[in-house]
Length: 412
Image (cartoon, rainbow, N blue to C red; front, side, top):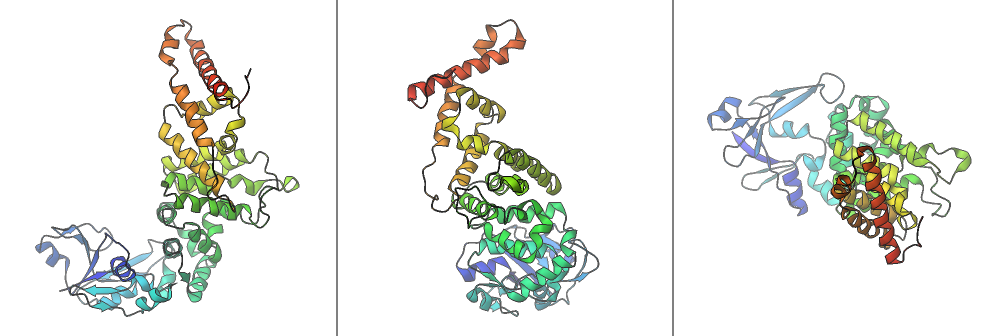
């Protein structure tokens, strides 16, 4: 029995990058042999075991054979006679198909180290085309290693996979799993750039693909269309190390601009409602988790008002807080402001520009929170009028704050 460190741990060590995960391949062993040593089985589709002390994953060397369409259309063969090279050959990229012995010797049958040095994402072999998830993985790795290019032959293979319909068999859960990982990389726009280059973006996320070529507003840079702006907003969310819901909201905030009537372009009047509808459709199709879905829908509907916060009436500000549930969900409201910051700074030359809306609205929210809703409720016997009275008290409080700050004149 021989044990090898494989995959990302080897790649990242060669790159000098941290990697807490260490995966192992075991050659020349059986499940019974590992169980006898105290390993715990966890693999559903093929033999994977957890080490009894470290809890690292140890997988028996295996080969794969395509049996049908999509991610699940495979059969696996794991046996003592499967070699390390055969196991590495089934992997996606050359940079992920390297191994090291326990004493540090590098085993690199597919020239992964060479591609690391050349900064190239290259598929290992023709079996790459059998698994459509690998299209998403290539795109995700492009977002992580943003200075790497995709090998021309690999990009051509990805295009063939899309054209043949292989990508259409990706299940929603797996698409979201890879998408979420890519959104959390250092330059997520690269993921969408690669997906668009191979044609997969139009199949998997047509709402996002449709943004490219759509003009932005008239006073913006003409060379920056709505798709490019969206990618700039997304990269702002990564630059600021914001959460996954914020990054997803950055991606979807302007989807409605793709359906702006041609006769009013480059204006986008009423795009918020269209953005809400298209974001909801995308979330339903990919079964997006509620935390991401809810924030994305709020961002699509309200980011325009948040940008204009200094011009809003006190009553509109209070309605914004109530509509976004900011009083009960202040952390989510702060995430909404984070997403709006990314939208504001996701423009050429605006990356470090001051954005006043968050501080302005958070001051107003603190004032609204100081209103004693319980005391107001106790003062009225007619329960039907209580919400109206509480709302009015909140408006008065915000109006007083704005007047004292000199931000706007006395409002009626």
